[in-house]
Image 1: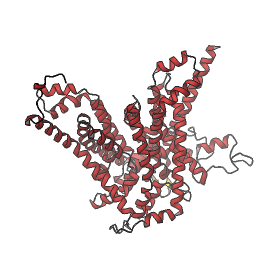
Image 2 (image 1 turned 180 degrees about the horizontal axis):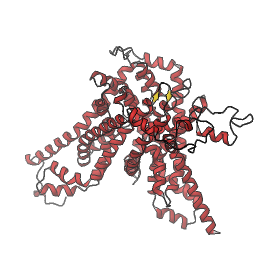
Image 3 (image 1 turned 90 degrees about the horizontal axis):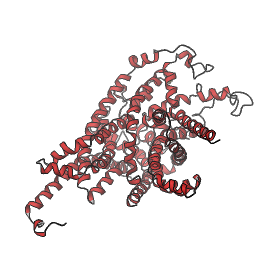
Image 4 (image 1 turned 30 degrees about the horizontal axis):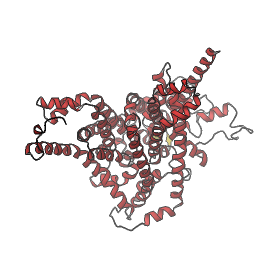
Length: 280
Length: 318
């Protein structure tokens, strides 16, 4: 009897989780199907849409890579992401270190203030920032994105790193300073290597958040060749009014999966930033 | 301080003061770039948004001429604006209520040990970890007016496309083409997208409950239901609130799902403040109106920020 109940509970758990996994992943499964399906099969309403009724094809991938700007979108995304990572590290690391180490009163308040700016949404800032971009002649330039994206990476990453630096005992760098290193040297040679996982987290987040960003890219860039992946795929793979569903789904799939894999490894740390003091 | 009094240098000694001064200057120097960046790229545009909302600037003529509160009055008189204001609240509150309920169930299930956890976790997190505009494009194809797989299944089981079918005789549901249904569709996709974030936050909250507390309650004869009511819910309330508040921020101010799926249609029935800001301020080029519409989001954000701060403070003190 008890055994039967256990099996039933196990079965219930797997059904529940299976249902949620299905809900989460089905749109991506749907992309896989469309990416490899022949147009004739894809656009026959009577065919079973879940299966390949005709042999799969690589036509959509060929079209995506050779007849659209898809590779250019990937390249633009990579450039913007790397530049944003550099700017974020250069500003957030020193700020977080100073806030963590000299935080009495004003440090704490300033840290919270910086975090709160993360809550000011792009949908309030994109109109004035689009004027900034055109004033500095950066409309249609990747530089506009490179300069604007740190507005959401710096606040969040500073906050995240502050937490990391606080967990490193002060004694370690004080010892290093007694041994003759300057404050800056102690930070560079002692504290930073110890918080390498925090720095890595920031690198991953600055990059993925830049890759996910939509509104600024939509507002600042309208030339096809300059688009990033998150706007290029949804706005450009449409001919006239006709959606190129095969290549569109292939593009969405190819761009989604690698970043999702990396992000999954770091999500817990990302969430630790959100939860602040709410979890001990 | 147990050191003898004479060993501690008095505060007026130049050397001692010199070091703290230098450290303080270094601290300020290290914080400065971040603060300057934030002031220039968040503070200044925010002020400019307020100025634009009080002006008659357009993309064609961006000069600032202040005209008072006229834009706010015009927005409030506009039926489309009023509809997007209402839609924004419906969109946010309904989707986030669904998210909190589902994420609770999902987090409780993920707390258990089972085989293949990494794969289940990866699949469940996909909607949040993959770029949202690309995930939403997948949904756009699923909601297609002819080739929707949901429609195919409904037809297959006889709920659609025949004379007596539950959902009518037409062959398709037109998920994004019928007013109430299109709102339900964008809400579903927004819930789909935020669910992973809320789940991971709730998971952190659930796993922080001391096990011995629950075991002690069990030994004392508390039923599972009572343990949930008296221990789990009160102890995880702060973190549930955090999950809810961040979900609200990310939903209330975002336009990706609405922009990709419906562009606010049909006839503005899924228009939200953020998408209406974009269409007015950027596509129609009316900077002043766009800025005014976007600023209607601010009071709600300010309230949410206060709640987040309070929660953070309170839980740190406890």
